[in-house]
Amino acid sequence: MRITQLSYFESVCRLGSVTKASKELHVSQPTISMAIKELEMEFGVNLFNRCHKRLSLTEEGKLFYREVKDLLERLDHLSVEMKKLGLNNRSIRVAMPPIIGAFLFPSIFNSFRLKHPDLQIIIRDCHYTDACQALENGLVDFSVIIANSDEHKHYSSLDLLETKLCLCVNKTSPLANKTMVRLRDLSDEPLILMRYGSFQHTKISTYFHDFGLTPNIVLYSSQLYTIFNNVAEGSASAFLIQEMADLHPACKGIPIYESLSLKIQLLWKDDLTINKRFSLLINHLKEVDFASHFKKIQL
Image (cartoon, rainbow, N blue to C red; front, side, top):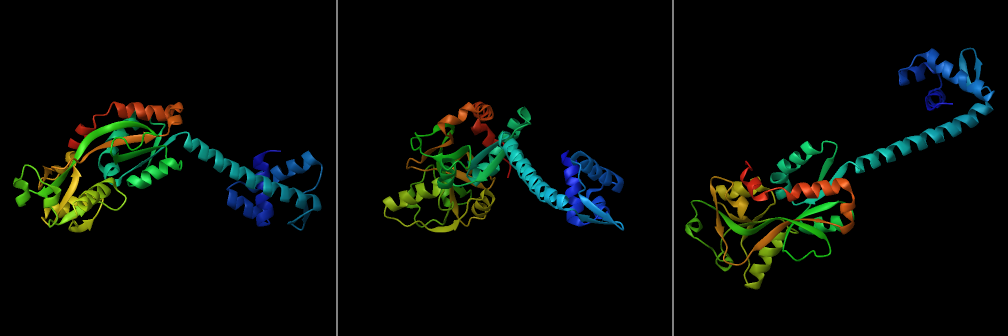
């Protein structure tokens, strides 16, 4: 008894004829008829009543059909589950902010794939809060976050880049002539903030709140193209990490007086490094000069 024979038998029973089963399976009618005959010879029973070129199941055939149908369904389910396991053994799931995932990591992950073409990187777009939650809930293997340096001691971490937030302004703006700006002097300036849940949103909002000020937010967006287009048109200024602020030719980054230092970090749970594919990614990222990768970004 072979799975192919069972599959042929199930198709004939479900469709009611060898002819229809042949068309569905793209197998010749004699091949299907022979497979069923071999099953009958193996078991010593007739599975079909054959009368005037019409088929009907015998009692033995009905019993066999019920069992075969259940068996093939379980085999299909097993096949799907095993393929999932195979994918999981080849995939690395990473959560990260969209602004990082879209512009910084593609070239880095491409170089990793060149070294390890059998592995697959799956990116999950998440802001700071969601990225941490996804890691905690086991939805991802790693999270790339923008955060303060000491907030995640319960995870293993790799510092990818130490940087600062600066104010990205249009080069024709009066602010572009300043060597430094203070947040308290920006309360009337039209500003762009990233969406709620991002580290940048939380950090900037907290500073303004501590100064007793309400920032003039005209747009919430985490899309770098959208942010730069608005700054380039002179309609608003934005807070970006200093490596990004000068990427657009019409924009300029101005240092901020208040300390807005941050780190881009890779986080993972402590027991993750026992898996070879995860260790490969960690070691690859240790070798990357992230500051130089920002210079290669083209808008």
